[in-house]
Amino acid sequence: MSKSVPARMTFTGMTTPGLIVRSLTNFAKALRHRGEIRHLAEFDDRMLKDIGLTRSDVSSALSEPLIRNPSWVLVRSAERHSRGERPDRSRPARPVVPMVTQAKRCA
Image 1 (tube, rainbow, N blue to C red):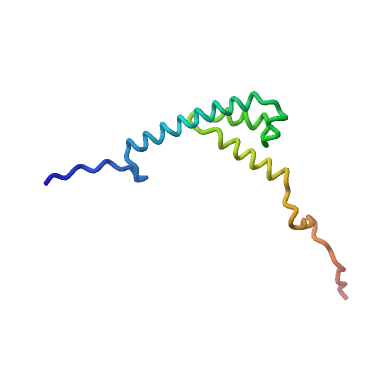
Image 2: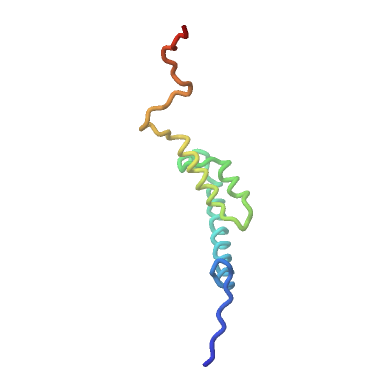
C-alpha cells in the first residue's frame, strides 16, 4: 500500500501553488481596477462629485503601489465624504460647552 505525499501546506492552510494563483489573480484584479480608475480621471470635477469623489481622491488612488488594489482608496474616500456631508440628524446635538445651571453659594 503506497501513500501519497501530502501537498506542502503554508501557515495559512493553502498550498504554495494556491498562494501563487491567488496572488496572480489579485494582481490582475488590481491592474484591471487601475485601468478603470484611469477612466475616472478623465471625468470632470462635477461628475466626480456626483459619485462622491474628488480629483485628489482619484490621483491618490492611482499613486498606490502597483501591487495594491487602488479601488479600496476610493471606497474609503467616498465613505469619508458621505459621512461628512450627511450628519446624523436623528439625535439632538449635544452642546460642546456643558450647560451651567444655577450655582450653589457657599455660606
